[in-house]
Image: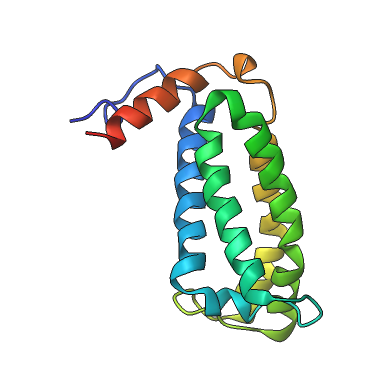
Length: 152
């Protein structure tokens, strides 16, 4: 059993959620490159270059996820993610208004409308990490432990 799997009081709930958030962001960001057409179709037609916007948002999701795990840049990453979540909100609105399906995600108009307030949850989650790293107990230790687990 690895140290990440063992029950431990070494990391706060906040730091465990940081890791979960970061990994989810990196996974979702990666899907922007695997299936960019799925994301491009929800971008409002008034915005230019939908594929470029999809790739940029994917890059920033991946970088934001990585950045959350690096204590000395985690605050900047959190602020960047807040900006990203606000920037992509028009695509979420467009998806809900026009019931645009994304392959691999259950297609139901109510889910698209539920996604809109969920964006506020993501913004709040990122906001939680806008404190300086020295004011976030366990941040450095968690990042170091996660990095060592990944390299094993």
